Length: 368
Ligand code: SMG
Ligand code: MG
Image (cartoon, rainbow, N blue to C red; front, side):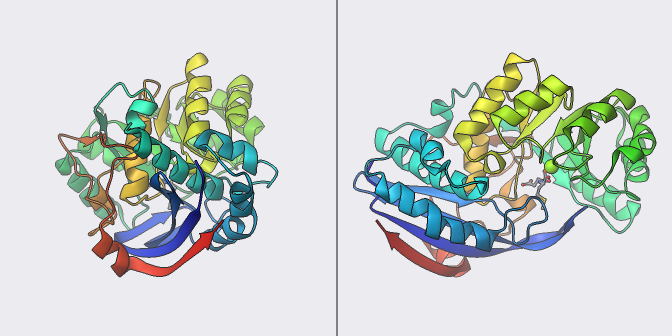
C-alpha cells in the first residue's frame, strides 16, 4: 500500500477512578492515535506509551517525536509498504517499540479493511469471545480493596489481578482470598517493585494459590527471575522483560518465566506479539493478553489477539467501562464475563467522530 499521509492525534480521556500501581497513579489516559491514509482506505493505530516513562522507558511525547522525525520518513520513503514490512523498515531506529507498534497497527488495519478480513481471522482466532480479567489498583485500605473487587466480581469478571508493591502484598492477597474464596482466579502484578532480596517475603504468597506473580523484579533481571522462580511456588510471569520474541525465547530458556503476558505495544506490534505467542506455545508456556488502558481501538485489537489459540489464560482485556465513562468507539461490554471479539474488517471497531473531536487535544497531518 502507498502511505500517502498519517494523521497524528493526541487525545485525553478521564479515568472513572484513579489507577495506582507500584510506579504511580494514573487519573487520565493520554494517547497518541495514528490514522494511516492510503489510496485504498484508512487504518487506525493506537500508541500505548504512557505520559511518563514509569512503566517502561517510552513516553507519549517521545513516541510522537520519534514517529514524526524518524519513523514516518522511513515509511514514506519506502514507497509501497505492507504491515509485514514495517518492523524491518523501522529496525535501524533503536528502541521505541510502542511508537513502531502504532504505525504497524494502522497499516495492518488499513490492509485488512481493504481486504475485508477481520484482525481476529487474520490472527487465526479460535473463539468469538474472550474471558475477561480485571487489573485492580493499589488502594488506601483493605476494606476499600474488598469493595472494589466485590464490585468487579458482581459485574462478572472471571479473573482478578491485584497490583502489589512492598507493603501492599501478602495482606491484600490474604484478605481477598478469605473474602472471595479459593476458587477465585487470582494473580498479582508488581511492575518491577521487588528485588531478589525480597524472595522470602514473596514466598509468603505461596499458600494463596495464585495463578502467577507478574514481573516482580527489574525489566533487565532475567537471571534474578530465574533464581526467584526456584525459591517461590507461585509461577513467575514476565511482562516488562519480554520485549521481543527473542527475549521471550531467552527468558524461557533461562527458566525466568513459566507464563508470559503478551502486550503488542511493548514488543513493537501485533505481528511480533503473534511470534511471541508461537515461541511460548512451542515451549509449552501459557500466554495471556495484557493491557495498557487502551481505548476501543487497542481494546478491539487486543480482543482479536486474545482469541488466538495460544492465549489460554484470561487476559487484561476488560470492558471499556473499567476505565472510561465514554470511549472513542462503541464500548466493549461484559457478556457473562467475556468480551466479544470484533468481526468487522480490520480491527473491526468504528471511531465515534463526535467523541473523538471532544477528547482531542492536538491533531496534525504528516504527508509523504
Ligand atoms: O488495560 O486493563 C488494563 C491495564 C492492565 O495492569 C494493567 N497494565 O503492568 O500489566 C501492567 C499494567 C501496565 C499499565 S499500568 C498503568
Ligand atoms: Mg504488568
